[in-house]
Length: 173
Image 1 (cartoon, helix red, strand yellow):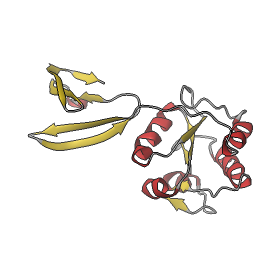
Image 2: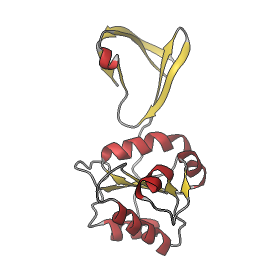
Image 3: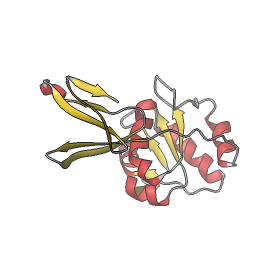
């Protein structure tokens, strides 16, 4: 599956190059629907993230770490491995450069790679005992009052065990 940073300049040609590399390796290309729509990639059948989660063997993400984190969050329930190609300014997780993309992807699709497993955080916001919001995250979870400001009261539990209760402007886990 191929994902690109939404509305990024100059992303169409590298994504098409990735698609050709995948096809040359014998793979079928699944473009994420928002990426395909934004770039006008009518020659590819666009797929929702949910459909990709059920069908894809691997996802290639073209963008920066923010794009990678967003795709990782969406695909986490499906356990699909991700390959990050850096098209942004910061690349700790998207550490394959555009210059290295061809050789690196060909090798990886040929089975020559090392896996770097990441911990996935599963977070819920509960109000009156009911789940108000649920999300998965790779790096961190931020809980705050947002633009309205003010204090939040929260309880941190790890594997069901209460660690502490606190009031604060917010918390980054």
